[in-house]
Length: 147
Image (tube, rainbow, N blue to C red; front, side, top):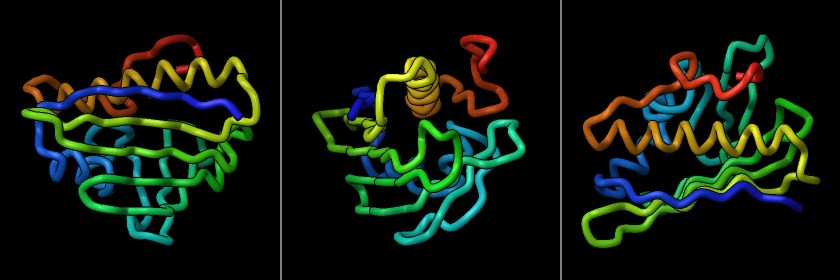
């Protein structure tokens, strides 16, 4: 199985970063402005990026302020049953975010695209906490004709 992994330090408390990852309002502030559903353990969240069909994530774990874990239950075939994990810990004046998108069946070209998009969105999350501007979809940076 293949994985996408990123690590970044954010100058904000783990509680604030966790809220940006674990709540609909928080997710809409940096990933996509179109979020629906229930962000609670056992609930599901639907994310739209301009396509008619949403990406739907089952919320598998919410452990404040350390971990958010989802499993993809609807969306692109390459994402089906993959897991998205946000793990947080405080280190001095910053919160470290360890991001993993795990369970890809193989290293598709689409996985490379998604890795770059995740990095872009996560850097937007960081910017939003550090005086810059987050760029959730549809205001995100287009990295190719795929978006």
